[in-house]
Amino acid sequence: MTAPATGGRRPARRRRRSAGLVLGVAAVLAAVTACGNGDSGTGAQSEFKPVPQTGGQLTVWVDSTRLPAAQLYQKQHPSVKLDIVTYDGDANGSNYLQTKVSLFNRTRSGWPDVVFSTQNNETSWAVQAGFTAPLNKGQIPEATLNGWAPGANAPCTVDGTLYCLRNDLAQTVLWYNASLMRQWNYQVPKTWEEYQALGQRVATEHPGYLVGTAGDNFTPEIYLWAGKCGANEITGPKKVKVTTTSPACTRMAALLDTLVANHAMSTSSVFSSDFDKNSGDKILMLPGPSWFGGSIFQESLKTPPGQIAVAPMPQWAGETAPSVGNVGGGTWLMSAHSANLKDATDFLTWVTTAPDYQGQVAPGYPANTGAAKAWLAKQTASGYYAGDVTGPLQTAAAQVWPGWGYGQFSQEAIWAATVTPGQTAGKTIVSLLPDWQKAITDHAKSNGYEVAQ
Image 1: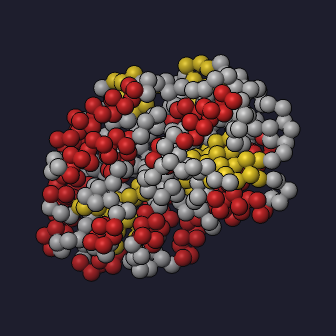
Image 2: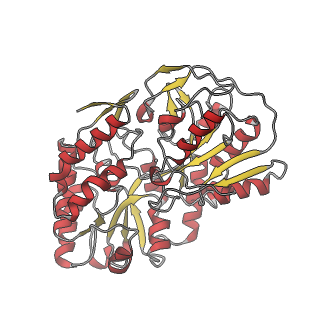
């Protein structure tokens, strides 16, 4: 069975983003402050009262990339009857899931038991809508929940209650061509200052080669998030602090402007045919998320084995608290309306932790640390990469800066509508930072947020 797709950003494996009375679920909400950057800006369910548990068929919604997960579970658990529905996974913040849940709440039927979303901000509406069931109130053992990477489930946590499970992480690292680095006798940069200097050398010594790209909608999540730019700090229930012109923002934006100006950094999307044709074989370095290794270098660009390596994300000189950004990583939600919580919980636990899926089939870096070890072992055994990938990726998984939150609005869409057109018109990112701040503020307010600057 297939639900209509409405999203259209990058392939859904990578990522991204009111209801009436709810049968059998307490819908009295209290204003709360969420844990870490997982503040949803809503209230948490004061008490969870499951509907009568009658068992029966389990309805699971997945995107096309997670379809193999549901199929593998069905194969390994033939006694569980699954109704697998494919939909867009809320790709590009399509809000398909929220729209359908709102309808199901009105008709009081139709809710799926388990849902995968490419977005990390679903709790910003799903908790208040009474859709997602608490997972750390007896459904999943604490020992199991302790197996997630530090901070991975922050987007799922509201007032200490866990309402979803992170499927994969998308922590940023520095991908680079080890063969070219050796050939040209370059050193992998450890600081952003060294990174910029090397980019300027490349522009002079090897024109046409690139040290990155600033042409994707998720550019701010790679660079500005990693640089601790406070453009998206969720501070409380429906509260956000937006500061895009601080030194942390302007120095990273200036770095991007410098490298774009000397053509060491592209302004094309890594998913564009233009990038593939003109730049695919001219990448020296490419800061980006953990999924770049497989999705970009292996699948899109067909870079031969033995060339691509991974290093820690650069840090500003003197930085004592290393930070990285995050570009994607989906979540699994379990419905508070499920009449088969036993099987729903089993599916949810299996799909996020099972080495058979997460370690062998899943395309992204698993959020569960045990599954991540299996996934990393497979990457190493593939022989594709030059050098160790395990150390840098494991380290970065615990360094995602918590000052960038998950509000009920898409930062990618805002950047695409505000900064990208300005870049196309020849403006610098530094000059566009005030416009970016105004656009974020306007979107946040339209979603009911109180904005501080």
